[in-house]
Length: 125
Image (cartoon, rainbow, N blue to C red; front, side, top):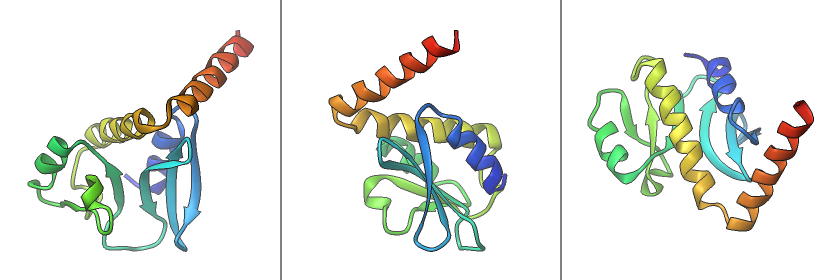
């Protein structure tokens, strides 16, 4: 797992955007809200993402997974190394993070994103 792999997974989600913040962190957003972050330079963690309170408790019990610095109170975890979790599980956790953030967006913004998605599907057909 590297930043390019994380980028492909995250940017492949509908309406996901990316932005470089805080100097060298690649941040992934949906509707302007963060759902994952990965440093592009060596750092103490290699990936951070949001999860449910239950998943937060479960994941932070595992070696290599810690409460994310500055955002643990919002149930974000961080991977200390690329091998902390299998790729398939990371992919699923990133999708779950995306879904959690999307569900918390205002209904009006969700509807706008959904309308844009339907329009794009219609254009492709």
